Amino acid sequence: MKRGLWDREMVALLLLLAMLPMVFAWLWFGGLDALGRLVFTLVISGIWHLVFMLARAQPPSFAGAITAVGVAMLAPQDLSLLQLILGISFGSVFAELVFGGWGRNVLNPATVTIAFLGFGFPTAAWPDFVAPVGWAALPALAMGVVFGVMSLRLILGAMVAPGVALAFGVPVAAALPVAALVLALLVTDPVASASTRLGGWLNGGLYGALVVLFATGWQGAATAQIAVSAALWASLAAPLLDEAALALWTERRRRRHG
Amino acid sequence: MSARTGLWGILTEPLIRQNPVTLQILGICSALAVTTSVATALTMSGALTAVVVLSAGVISLIRRHIPDSIRLIVQIVIVASLVIVIDQLLQAYLFEISQRLSVFVSLITTNCLVLGRTESYSRHNPPLRAMVDALGNGLGYSLVLTVIGAIRELFGAGSLLGWQVFATVDQGGWYTPLNLMLLAPSAFFLLGGLVWAIRSILPDQAEALDYLRPDDPENAA
Image (cartoon, rainbow over all chains, first blue to last red; front, side, top):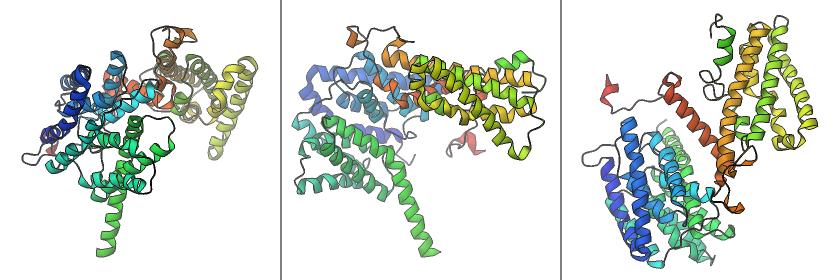
């Protein structure tokens, strides 16, 4: 994608800018521990981008910083540095860099990293967020939509199922702040989410529905685990949803114009 | 592989350069399923190598008498009877491991590697060459299985062949086992990484690109 000002790095920088409210809120409440974690994930992610620049002449991208922010905030706590290095290396190399860099990947590398760490080390505790960090997801989503790097359809679609659940009194409220955080950090990634209009609605709707399903049916799961698993499933399904939207569109065209 | 290759060449070619698993991507179903530990990987490797060598010998012996129209049925019958023998032997002498391998020994019958070798090589070559070729392919398969099995057991349980290499946290040591290694997806990742590594070292194994970048000036011409 290259259209005037809008190259890949511009999108990455705007995404990063949109995430800042959450990052600052999280750093404010997390203190030095959180800052150290963020610096560490930034360094590891940056090293892999450098390695691929030197070995395969792939331009490094600020998207590496987006991955690092997502991993630092959502990955399970009390992992050793070695485990964190293993997880980030796996996620950024196998989910992003082998495909040729950000923009060609199928899944969000941060989602893959966090899911890898979560399933690989099931005893590690998932992070918990204070309420203001969850609220900070709202300005982040709003900024993303205003900048044009996040899909408004996807975000609205994601509110459908939780909204219905709340209206019928299903107890899902506890999972919603983290679900909003994950929505802003992982699900709305313009590369890994659906890119057609209908696909965006469906992708967001699927994410919201999965959050509700997991929150009511998955006993003993942490809220962050629920949201990240829903994000992984939703982004795995995104190409299928796009495909469905395209098939419907061609069918409609065929019927109208023969 | 030309007909002029010596026996040594036929034996060593499938180990890495023509490896059935990493180059031809044959027989990976079992390669993914039985590699949670080195012991099962080695048993499966032995069973498959025995089956592929013996069936190559038998089929090559009667290669001029197999009617072309029913050759697959004949081959499968021969392979299946050998598999049953091997399965019975495993159940008699290695009962525990045969339980852990469950259906995968019987499924050697339909293993693409075995049928691939009998169909493409044993039908056209004399018994000795066919058996050496089958042995090479069996060993190539075993090599991949052993490597993946060793990595999965080492990082998933901290042990090799049941002998504790890293003391795990449960046993008062330092190593936190990576549970993901014992789940099926890790075998996919490891096999993919292995294929990637081999093709980086031997670039002539890499396949041509399906798509070219439209906006790359180098491809425009």
